[in-house]
Image (cartoon, rainbow, N blue to C red; front, top):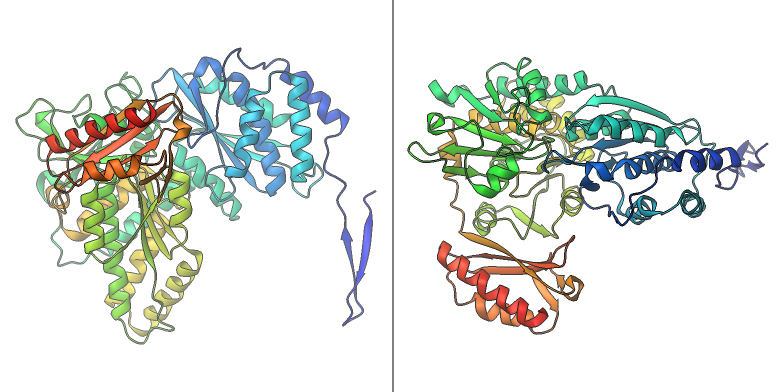
Length: 580
C-alpha cells in the first residue's frame, strides 16, 4: 500500500488525498529479467559507440546489443515522461551495410540532450551486471517510477535496410524487459513519419500512416485551391516533377502519397523497387555534395523540375539538369528552399497585417535560423528582405530549439534538412482570425492568407525535417508564385565555397563562440584567420572542431572559386601551424 497524506484546503475545509509514490527503484523480478536477457546481447569487443545528432550509427553487424539496450532506454524514457516514445532504426544517407538507432521524444523531436550521456553509458556497459548497476543508479537519480499511471509505450519503425528487421526485433526485446511496456511495430517508415506519429499520438490524436498521408494530402489540396486565379499555372513539361528516391523508403512512400494528390504529377525513380542500391550514386546527400545528376537521370531531363530525397526521407534538394553536359546540374539546396518558404510566409503575413479590424491584430514574429555553413549569399538575401536571421551552432537540435522561439520559425541546412515551426499561440490566433474573417469578409485576401498559413502548418512536419511534406510545400508555393525552377534558382547566386579537413592531435584544443564562427582558443588563431580573410573580395571563413573525429573543419567562401580555394588552403595551413 502506498503512503497517503490528506490535505485540507483552508478556504473551503474540503479534503483531498495526495498519493506519495514509492521511491524509484527496480524490483528483483525486473532486475533478473534484464540480467538474463542482456547476457544474450553482449556488446562487441573494442567498439565504443556515441549517441550524436543521428543517434547511434555503425556497421549493422555491430549494433544488435546497442539497439536492444536502446529498447530499454526508450521504455525508461516513456515511464519518466508518461508519454509515447519512438525508436527509429535507420542510418539515413549512410551506405546500405550501415544501420543506426535513434529515439524520438514526446514532442516528436530528438532525445533530450540531458539523457545522451546515459545513452552512451548504456550502450558501452561491458557486462550485464554493470548494465543493471547503471540502470539502477539512473532510475534513482531521475526518480523514475515503475508503478506509474501509464505503462511505457513505444512506437518502433525502420527503413528499408535488410539489417533492419533483426535489429527491430532486438529493440522489441529490450522494450519488453520493462514490465508492462508495450512495443508497437509501425512497419517500414520514413524517419519523419515516425517522429510525426509520436508527436501526434501524444497530442491525443490518431496517428496511423494513413492519417499521416491524409493530413498531408488534404492540406496540399487546400493550398492548391487557394492559389490566386491571376497567377499563371504551370504548363507543358513544368506540370511534372521527377524525384530521385535514393533507392530508399522515401520513394516508396511518395508513390503512395502521389495517388492522393491532384494537380501534381510525380514520377519516382530509384524507388528501391528497381533493384538499385540504397544511397549508391543516388540521394540528396550525393547530389548536394557531388553536384551531379543521380543514377537514372540525364540530359533528357533538361528543363524538368527534379528533386532528390535522402535514404530515410528527412532531406530534400532540387536540381535542374544541364541540356548538353555529362551530368552537370544547377543545385537548388536547402538554403533556397528556406528562402522560398520565407517569401511565401512573409507574403501571407503582410496581407494579414494590412487587414484592418481583425481582433487584437497580432504582429507575428517570423524568424529564420541557419548555421554558419549557410551560403553567405543566402543570408544576405534574407537580411535584404528585412527578415530576422539567427545563427546557431551546427546540428539539428540547436536549429530546432532556436526556431521554436518564434511565432513562425524556419530552419534549413544547405543539405536539405529543415522545417517550419508554428507556435501553438499563433495557430490559435490564426484559427480565431480565419473564423472571424469567414463571417465578416468571406473570400477576402486576408481570409485566404490566414487559411494558407493554417494549411501550411498542417502540411509541413512540425516534429522533424520531412522531405515528403517539404516537396509538397515547395510544389504548391511554386504554383502559387507561378514560378519555374529557373526563376526560383535566380533569387540569388551562391558564393563559391570550399570545405577542408585538417588532421589534428586533439580537436578539443579548438574552442569556438558566436555559433562556431569565432575561435577563442588557441589564442591568436582567430586574428590570423581575420588577417587572411580580408585579402579576399567577399571573403568569409571559419573553423570548427569535428564532433566525431580528430579533425578541424575549415569553411571558406569568396567571390570566385579560385579565391575560395586559396582562402581555405591558407587557413588550413594556419590551423596546422597552431595545432599541428
